[in-house]
Image 1 (cartoon, one colour):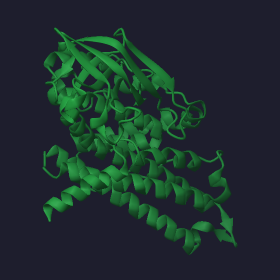
Image 2 (tube, rainbow, N blue to C red; image 1 turned 60 degrees about the horizontal axis):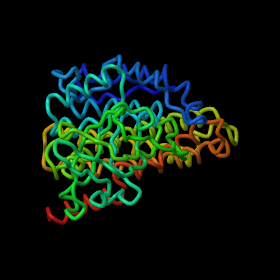
Image 3 (tube, helix red, strand yellow; image 1 turned 180 degrees about the horizontal axis):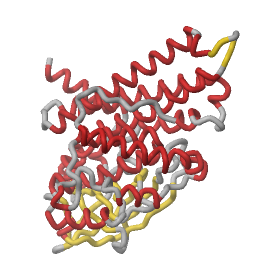
Length: 386
């Protein structure tokens, strides 16, 4: 089920065609199986490979590496359709996207070429940063990278690593010296078959269950110095730049999920009758739907604005990106809560999709920097500006 896709007159024909293509793909390939994927907590690997075959696996990678080289705004348009179809799949694609960003910022041509070869063949990437005691405080990571000659030996554990179960290539952050704090953090590109890399348990999650999340353990894993992305100590900067670029996409994905919740709410409100008329005729329901639609549109415009600032390399991109992620993901939680209210008891039942949308929405407020962290970023920028 879909309402007419938004076209405010500012998007190019190429953007609209790509957005519509992804929407049609999600409607045919993901929407019919989303409930089953959620129930079984399984990732549709073959569907992902179809996405890669469509050229969507390396969207933001330059054309010289076989990518599409699209703008951040175009990427946000696609993320909204992923979120509309299945938030778990959107989470997988978002994590895959940020897996390549450090390479785009500081990787060598050989590293970028290898990454592109893996992904264009249907491979998937993972961004391995979070640890049990280092989530919002990235500088507290304890995974070590000890240099011995022309090699690094990695030891440590990561958690909540999206895509790890199927990932063919990892972007891993470790410290070359814990006493240096964030100045010791260094990034590496790691192939899955590297001896010493072990993928741990599959997390049994509340929502976005079609997106697999695992621990990753490194035990005396040896890497060549050629696996290092950029210079020693550059990892913190690469991680923060990556997350800055990922937040408008996360916002757009949350917009897509909320849009799906609104569509289901409108459909139900037109069919459900009380007091002799469809409940959409009742002002109480109309006001809820009006607020949902308004908040979705506001979040969409903020995510588009943040994406355009990234494309323009504006100094405000980080601040507005944090705004977009914070506002859109809080909005998605509110809209899905209201969607359940519109459907009443049916909204609380797994027979109807809004229950899944509600569960899927929650993690948006947590991953890629909690919304409390986003407010710290925004607050710091406001204090500096005024």
